[in-house]
Image 1 (cartoon, protein in one colour):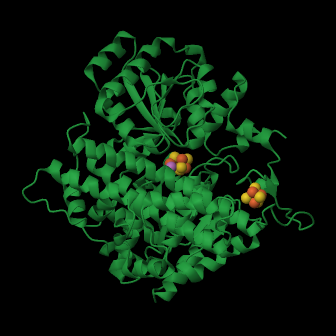
Image 2 (image 1 turned 30 degrees about the horizontal axis):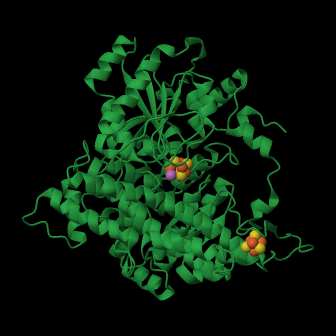
Image 3 (image 1 turned 180 degrees about the vertical axis):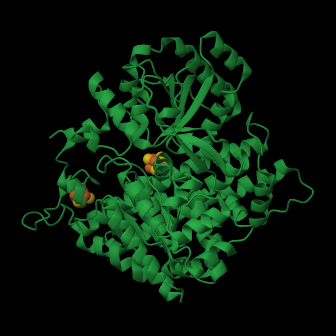
Length: 625
Ligand code: CUV
Ligand code: SF4
């Protein structure tokens, strides 16, 4: 059954490129999705196990045939184990990214990381004091070196618990300790997940899931938080600024370089190299009017937040960017990069350049990136793009007109600044009911959902009901494309939220960064909870991931809920094959961590669930509802 193109997205630029793809006979994720239908129902329910070579085993969901794997594992065990492996993969992705940031930071402190420097001294010093490092008498580099050593220990720590969790409110820390889910070394938690899910180790669904929560916490309050902090020190803490998004940011007459993936270590240098006079001169020689860098996915969010570099699209627009025919180089590092890009780039003049020692793809030009000669490599990459400009085929170029303005850069520091230095005005607005609560809406795109439909409609419904929205990842890009990241978008908000936005000059939807920057949302939640003298689970707040797809999102879900935030998922996780696991996630967790998951594909209904939750919390706090 072939889906009509217009059913695939709510975004006109996306639809135009999907139409172009069709006319040119090139395949995208949507066509490949259709070829996968119907998807395997054992996989969908999470009841297929391949953890040993007696298998694969699968459980009959109707209870007529096999109700156990060969080793005796039940559906509950298999579903829980599979979920734990996803959490481990997601936590590993965020935390390995964090490790590389800290290693770069450490090399920088030793003067061995070429062009990287300390950009935010204040953040370095405040972090140093948080970790008990004295900055007296020493140089900034010495302080940085000590901080790097302490943070590196967080990964390989063999005893004790993670230090970064100390930012959580007291009652939360106490609860984690009581439950035995205070995360230990980040790497240790991930390794333990792999160990426990090996054949014949952990075979108790509840016990397995508790490890899932702990591993998630080691990501959110560990790896992700470390990544955010170190990136802020190295590249600057984001401040409000304006930029533009969507495929229309690609330039007709400039060399277009796309940075796609997740690590700003790379994209920061590309942004800098694109301003190099030598390369600008070369671009001119090649007949181009300049060099235009645009982002996709979270590495794009990183440079957007810190430099206002435009964003070409969300996860599902990565192939469409190539299909414009206007991209000279698609430069990727790690995570959420479709391997299809290689073959696709071959249909156009695009050079598909992979840069991470960890991530190779079919048909790429490999230009490995190492921090000691980062700037040189970045220049080589941009040079390759510039030299590719004359190969652009004008008849194959269509750049959509859609190019939307947005206001971004809302780090916790920037939000506090906008509030006049303390969270009090926000708390007052919440108390008075002008702001009903806070909604954190995050996550990917997923071909199972009409592109951006879930993101945009959920967020619109929340702001209409006076819920201030904080966003990261692809949700943030989707909101930007829909014009929701502008102060003017407060016209779409309820009267209370509108008044607050107008008074502060902020949008009703605050872009807080990349997916690892969900750690900023944790820090903000802690600040609000501490100020109110309550736990995070008492706040009138709720989370959502309307179009999530990645394993990172599973880890995020685990830590957000373990931190006390009720979270609504828009796509169904592969757990329905176990009644026990499903009810634990959607109900049982409430009694454990004071929050749970819900699944609701309809964004308006999902917003309704969040509002209901927020109102319940308001009532419990004795606030006007
Ligand atoms: Ni992590 S939000 S697709 S890129 S994880 Fe990638 Fe950010 Fe999802 Fe989007
Ligand atoms: Fe089957 Fe058990 Fe092996 Fe999984 S671990 S494949 S359920 S025998």
